Image (cartoon, rainbow, N blue to C red; front, top):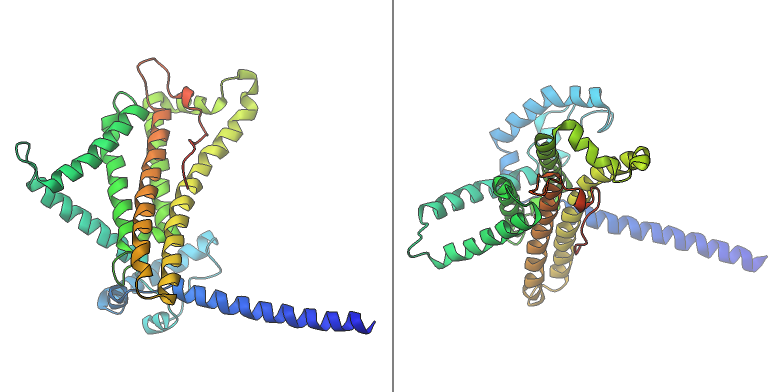
Amino acid sequence: MFLLNMLQEHGQAAAEHGQAAAGHAAEAGKHSAHHVPWLVEKLNHSPLGETVFNLQSAIMPKIYAGLKLFGPHWPGEGKTFEQYLAEGNLPIPTQIVMFSIVVFVAVVVLWLLRGKLSTESPTSRQQSFEVGVETVRGFLNDLVGPGAMRHFPVVMTFAILILLSNLLGMLPDMVSPTANFNVTLALALTSFIYYNYVGIRNNGLLGHLKHFLGPVPWLAFLMFPIEIVSNLARILSLSIRLFGNIYGEEQVSGAISGMVQFGLPILLMPLGLLTFFLQTFIFILLSMVYLGEVSHHDDGHHGEAHGHGHEPAVAH
């Protein structure tokens, strides 16, 4: 009996110690995951941040009350701008600022490159860019077939924005927008809406829905809901894969840099670059596969051979 009581007391003490340690680890992870760059701080404490807060104060409480999905009430309801900031809230979220920088840089760089393009004497930068363009074109032609080039602007836009977003996190006091689930979810929804729009445009609404019935007519009643769920799951597949890898890479690099500040972080940079390029490639590759499923082909089929609802095996 004495032994049982002793084990119980030690077990309770160990459990309390474990909960305390877990709480400290969670708090540390929270602080590291919510690093706010200097530029984001300045924007949110500027008149622009106050203007955005006033606009949100007029709109967000009604949205929270109407949808009842995000919580009982908006965090800034009944608070002043200073109180809202003091609680650690940001009217202009970090990912919005970071993604705006990515869009601005992409537009400027592409505009400058366009003015220096030459077919007679291309520069090394132009040739490097052409390698990426031709690679995407080759995959589009292979996976989508005839008429694939009409989708090239959309796919290439995904590639440029995602790659630059991934690379932004390597700059000092910057954060990758794709390390935030809201950004990757928006990208996944855009891809999902676009390829379904293409399917409806090419095949009509009924023809597009026919893809979900499967090849066996008497199993259509069973395959249809399965294929619909599988199709919707692609949103999570695209968004979570990209978010998880970029967020994980940032957290691991940050933790290692905190422990070893010299030498080792530089050695990890090639691995980070590989992750950034690989995740960009996987996202656009899957988007092209989905487009190939819903696009017309010369043989009269509309993508049945690809097997709607199934993804190719890709590295995570």
